[in-house]
Amino acid sequence: MSSSTRFKGEKCWIVWLMVTSLYLRSTLGQIVQNCPSRSEIAPCSCIVKKQGLDVVCEFTDFTHINKAMSVLKGRPNTIIYYLKLRHNNMPKLQGFVFLGLDIHHLTVHNSSLAVVEETSLSSIGKGLTQLDLSQNSLLVVPSAALKTLHHLLILNLNYNKISAIHARAFEGLDTLEILTLYENKISVIEADAFKGVDNRKLKRLNLGGNELNSVPTSALSSLEMLKKLEMQENRISTIQKGDFAGLKSLDSLGLAHNKLQVVPAGVFSHLTQLNSLELDGNKITHIDPDAFIGLEEHLQYLRLADNKLHMVPSDALRRLHRLRHLDLRVNNITVLPEDAFAGYGDSITFLNLQKNLIKTLPPMIFENFNSLETLNLQNNKMTHVPEEVMETVIDTLQVIDLTDNPLICDCELQWYSNWLKNLRDKDDEVMTKKRTVCTMSNEHREYAVQNLPLDRMGCQPIAEEKSSSGNLAVKLVGLQFVITVSFVVLF
Ligand SMILES: *[C@@H]1O[C@H](CO)[C@@H](O)[C@H](O)[C@H]1NC(C)=O
Ligand SMILES: *[C@@H]1O[C@H](CO)[C@@H](O)[C@H](O)[C@H]1NC(C)=O
Image 1: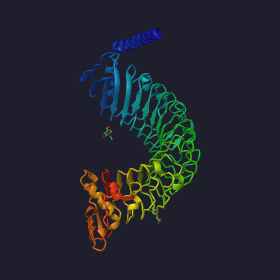
Image 2: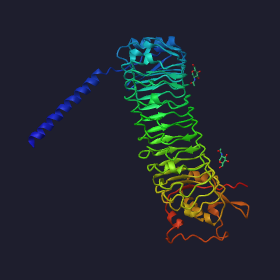
Image 3: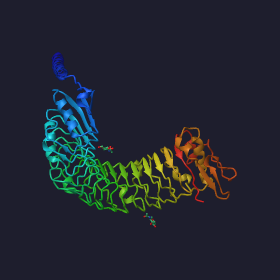
Image 4: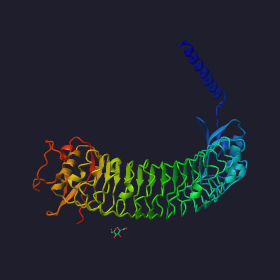
């Protein structure tokens, strides 16, 4: 007992010594950072940040920037935490421009940069963790200049004019975690393009906004650690089984705004860790019943909005028993069969069917939903929403949007009327903005749904106090729903 206590005490002592010496070393080693005077580095400016200097040079040229760098070079032990060169005229980053400087985050943005000389960055490889060369005129990845940046974590090449990624373009960037190439002109990615950053740290890759016609499978397949792959806004017209082989850690895949028409069987079967899949804004008409094989255990977010689907792809969805968020808005769905959500709806919390052509909701359509919180049916063709349709989901729902449907006022809407009356006293912005009306066809006039003349309509009043099974009005009392309903009449 006592020996173990003493042992513990010794361990504490050693840890204390280590911590103290580390602390002393770091405080002693830290030189207080000072900016050069304003006139020395003008037109650049400098402020002192906690971790070092923050130097900004804007709307100037290389000569002035080079002069400011010389001043900084004459001040040993200076840490430049941020060097931001923006909106300059600087077509070339010359060799040795930063020699002797300790720069951690370097930005050269919107400066017509086209050439990055090999020796321009090599001298700052020890400290550089972030490099932003966005919105310039680069035609190729400046690989020779990058290859000694062994501590780089983030490389941003967005908004340049790169048309091809050649083999080993990023070799040497052993620690790179985020690579983003959004909005270039990339149509070719060679098979070994990512050799050197593969099987290492790369977690996020953005290839969006380019000119890819197909998935660059052979280049991607060795990115075993990749979590997020963005390929939205390209020209990909087909995907096939095997396209995503090797991406075994992938968590999120973005294929929105491409030209896909078909989602074939097994195409994502290698992506067993996938949590989020974005397929919105394509031209998808067909989803194979086996399209989502492999995604059973992890897929939670599925975006299929803005396609050309004629029906809910129920057979494909049925295996996705973890699905939480299903977005089918802006499609061409006209009919919802009774079993549209059978066998997989129980985990769904968010369902969007906005802007389709749905006329009716079958009575048991939401029978399997146990967790539905948000239901959007805005802008469809529904004339009736019977009480029994909502009955199974009413306890969990927090938001329902039924605006922009040609609903007809009748006794079936009584539950709705009561529901809205319940909400009237609550602060609901959406409610107060959208006046909730419906039209009585025989009177050719509109009514606010809360003010339906139920007695004149000859409706049997719903008992509000008595508890009878299946009485929705009773269930509604005390629940805090946010419901927006407006009835739009097409005449
Ligand atoms: C880019 O820089 C130029 C000056 O070189 C400036 O006039 C222009 O407004 C900048 N563009 C953007 C989008 O910031
Ligand atoms: C939507 O579906 C209908 C038939 O169900 C068809 O006539 C129409 O052309 C489709 N619209 C689009 C945009 O696909």
